[in-house]
Image (cartoon, rainbow, N blue to C red; front, side):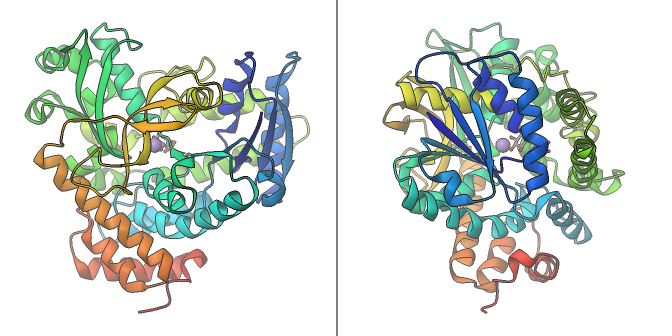
Length: 451
Ligand code: G6P
Ligand code: MN
């Protein structure tokens, strides 16, 4: 089984490889091809993987290439984890949005739109190459904004592309843990779009245990989302939102925290990651140890500005080495095993709606529980969204559709509409200035030429 990783020089690739190393069963991945546009980054990551594989005779073979066609040909699975414009681009997305007083997070608000506008054309071109060279491959999309990018790719690859995110799975596991429930048998009722979903129930033996958790302030204070949103707001909603909804429900506070922070997330990661790749160029650098140290720092500072704004304290320690079942790489591995070996399971994934959420059309990519088997991911019927969630989900889907229209046509007016319709952008004038600002900054947006 051959797995190709697009964005193979990316920092989180060793997480995926580490998960593969733990899989010894028949039908496992035996060859990994890393594709990237940057040779130095490929070399750095290949060194980390080589140290990870040391002493393991059945470790998947690793090859690297900067040729997309070569990478894709013959692949059974393709992981797409690219970052168009790099972390430099991410930092610029934040800076330009903040200068207008709006949020520039890479997946939410103005930043997510800017990032989507430059990523969709690239992801679409990649999807076309895959459709041509490896039409039977399954494509697992990690590239953010993951829901939007999966929808763009699904227009070419249909249901052969499946988007993943670890945050809903992580939320389900955290809630199960505080309730002392077994996550293997509990049913997590989680629905929405990527980074815009709600856990509405956790059913154990047919009974919803969420009301019990919502009634218990101490238990709510013991995990990440409980601390971010606070017990009162969670009780008002009657659900636990995805952590990214903090940017919506506490927008002023998060924008302020981002403005007051020494650095935005993108700027922090740009400095941290370029330090890592520089260090890796030195021959004596212990690759795996250096990577682990950098990862621990990245994990510890995740959503730090939000926690600061919420007074939520430090992040719970996450043991990077001993990958959690809800971690990014474990979700990807579980999905791959279910599809490749028919190890049937349910996972929360980004797939085409097909009638699951009645307020959206069949082709809209949504994030919902799916039954997964050798035929792919099948969304499971869910209860309708409450009105407040319908409002946000349909508004943001309309924004995504404008981004797709802009990327497909090169029309600036669709791009302006995308920004203007977003619930976290409060003026059409701001939307116009954002398009001009982003266009001036990113060469990848030069295609927005038409009126
Ligand atoms: C979470 C999100 C991902 C995101 C990751 C890293 O897992 O679900 O979409 O890529 O965090 O975030 P960071 O801010 O460290 O790049
Ligand atoms: Mn995510």
